[in-house]
Image (cartoon, rainbow over all chains, first blue to last red; front, side):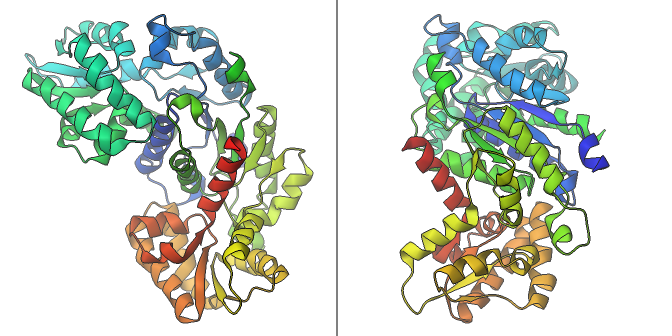
Length: 237
Length: 237
């Protein structure tokens, strides 16, 4: 039992949404190069979709999800996980609050993504941010990109409200064929507005783009994959 | 927070293998008819691939997985899950031992599958069991089918050892394109031997058959899906 008990465990604070947490786990499987079950990253996933809606909370239209997220954090903590991943960009608005409640490192998906961009960035390029209303209004990505003086393009508030948000909620209803073309078109419009790359800054977005095999994926920073890569690098380093 | 705190949580004792536990979660998502995140089944998944190999243990070639499974059971118990699902057929050899350690009901995948078969069964038909060496040698499905006098066909031990087991371990290495045709052919040979239906009695098998879109799926009792249906029926009833 020595090996089994000594393996560090990855905690996943999921539920935002439940499908994104499953997609994230699939990325971990696909990114890990293993020859048998025993080599995979051991993980405990708290995948509770009942967390209050993050978008409504940021818009002061619903209760804060923080208390519910802290319930999940407690479950992961008492299960002795070594690191925590949250496969939801908007939830990172509460990253600092969550981190203040635990000594376990919570990977920061937004910082990790922008660090990847910095590695590939060439002067003069613009980055498109495809994100929810909540993530955009809290400027999660805008502030992080500004630290490195990287210019970005985003959609107008009305486009987000009328086109992007319905597509994201369609993914949450598992209507990928409906959401995919909308999210592809919205990405393309950011390219038309000058973006060299697109940050898929909501973990529902790559699910739909993969379902329709969107070519936008080739010029995307896929935040789910970047978080998975970080976990794989941590575990197998 | 009332709704959130009152929702029953499904515990998933995974890791056998890790990919099967993710496939099972995807089935839960796909089988649940929901309009938003908050309507999904809340789940806590202990997905620890480090559990000692079940096949080796049954063959007295490795340590028992029971102690490791009990660690997972404890994590789920202290997280106050309401029911437990184990998306691994062979692991059900230890179902009774696990159930003796907890008051929380652990769904019995083998019994649930055979109950489904009984509903569809017509006198004279034979059922093919496509299972691992461990599941076959412990007669998990043979005994359960015998309770209802349902005749079955299985492969010879040598075929299991030389063809099925390498394919199952290939799924565990994520080599689905390699495993799929082998598992399809093995299913077809059970049909040729008189089977009207095939029990996919190892949760790695449907992953590979889906990857190659095998027509065998149409005449299969997919144990992963049957377990998912049971969880969905329990939660939404």
